[in-house]
Length: 328
Ligand SMILES: [Zn+2]
View 1 (cartoon, rainbow, N blue to C red):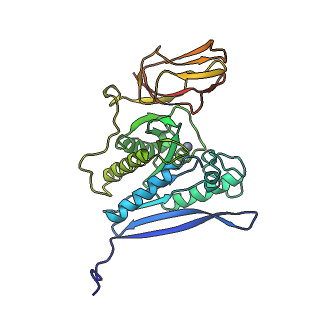
View 2 (cartoon, rainbow, N blue to C red):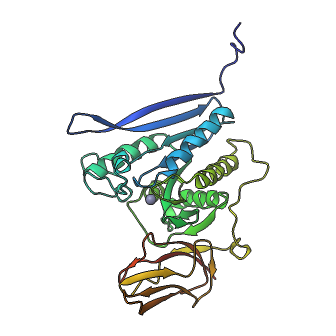
View 3 (cartoon, helix red, strand yellow):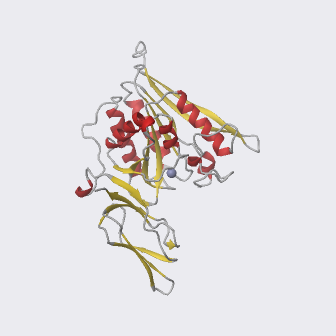
């Protein structure tokens, strides 16, 4: 006897591919594509991961979100995903597309007749744009010693206000620290989407290179918060909120990696990711090989430490730490 044979599924699941190139061995390179469509119309949310080949946590976060949504189907709308946008970089543990050494996240909106990265960017961008999404969440990883946070792009201008306001509202519901980027990276996926009137947000999920299970859990909870805000899933009983020092809560933060090191040498860190630091506080010292102090990194403002460099090698003009700077 067949159980529930008359019951129609409330959503459709599809896993397929988008072709990006043919290799020198004539192998076809493709981007895996995942889709969940509820039978009830609603918002269209995209999840994108591993645009930088060494940033692997997003892939698994997307897998886990899809597993969860297959167990507890969407109330309405669609969730689409490109979990692995840079398979060539991923296979060699490299941020960039190894063949052409290009940064895919500096190649948007892309060009179908351009460089390899621009062609891949064009495939990603046109595929996403065709679906007229409500929101795109781009999952990244940061330095090894870093806390998770969301990054909103600088204001893309009055004509893109609606998309930008939506992205900022979504960030507030993420459960993560909300950090405003001050550098305008025009060719990134998120900023290019905003300039095409599509709300987009970058989510930094801690360390690169190795899947960090804790950060996967945080990432899934953050995405569930956002889907619940869009009324696509049930609201969690207790909305997720990443644990932070009390003084940070409700603060507007801007991203900064200043001051840079002024000397070459060996960095000894005095603060760690998640620490709240004061203006003028020493957060790192740089010594030469004989142990003589070369430079001390003092905070320029009150801030929270988002993370510190993956290496203790210092060079003049190189960033040592990243801060979420408290705005007045
Ligand atoms: Zn990245």
